[in-house]
Image 1 (cartoon, rainbow, N blue to C red):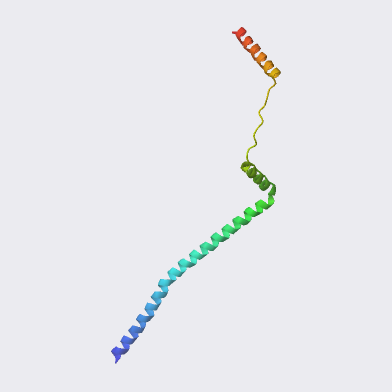
Image 2: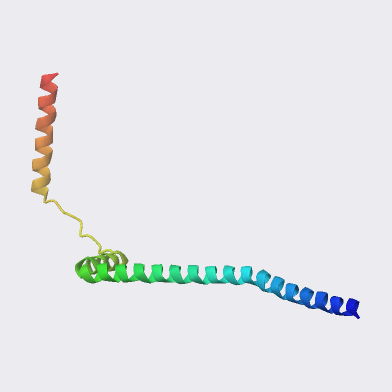
Length: 110
């Protein structure tokens, strides 16, 4: 009878040790999950803080945002066709005479 009671006590101790082992094994996984959740929360808070800072800067500088929007709109708008610049025949003649005088002066220097 003494042997049976000792075996019963050993079996009970083994059951308690198995339970303790399973708790310890899961504790590491739980700790890892907790750390991952805390990291995600911290990242989310950082993103929210950055978004708030950007919104605050944008609120302080609405003119800059308006200028950027205007530039963006101007870039998307089609370019207007430029009117060619036309010289009168008299202006062309004066420019040609001035150029000839310049060439003549250069020839006399050489």
